[in-house]
Image (spheres, rainbow, N blue to C red):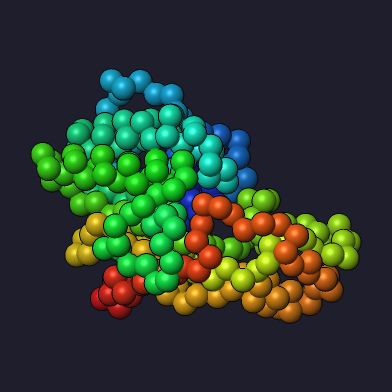
Length: 283
């Protein structure tokens, strides 16, 4: 298949491109900064087309511009990891809608876009895709609205649409402010103590290579569509996650629990139902 990947230089995009190439697919990769992409091991194995989604000519035929891909995996998004920034609503929502609308109306028939578990809002427990979304932060509101906008386009035009709600992830290349990235930095600096929250939150984590594998599996099939959780289905406390990571890496650093308050835009305990994902993987 010929697959277009936006946000290809990012934490997730890098792994998605690698996964697609390992399966011998033809990859068209795009991002804003070609200099950043030149450092990727896959740069010479893909067709790279630089593109700035936040600023493009609306008269451009994006489906033709990207060489008529069979599948679009849309990972690009600005403003992370600040989930509370109003820019997600005031700018990102509309620029990404215009990008996807242009691509679809000019011939794109197979779309996979990325959502977030934060669309479920303050709901606790095991969350399945049929749960009514109640987004409670700017990022989640923008993402959920984008999904609704694209679903409106489906009323007048046929295309396959997957909306992948990502839960939590970890691994090489993650942004520096992520929990485990900050822990690595503290150890490298020689800190004796690592400050964190109480650590009793229950979350759903997957390694980035597994996340990429799941995204590709979802994107390349047509049978199961709509909202799909990308998650393990197994809750783990943040405290346990960090302690296991320290043990695995033989770190000697003391954890100072309760230093930071819990985020006010997340419930204390939630994880994903992964039945739809498992049905895709086991097909």
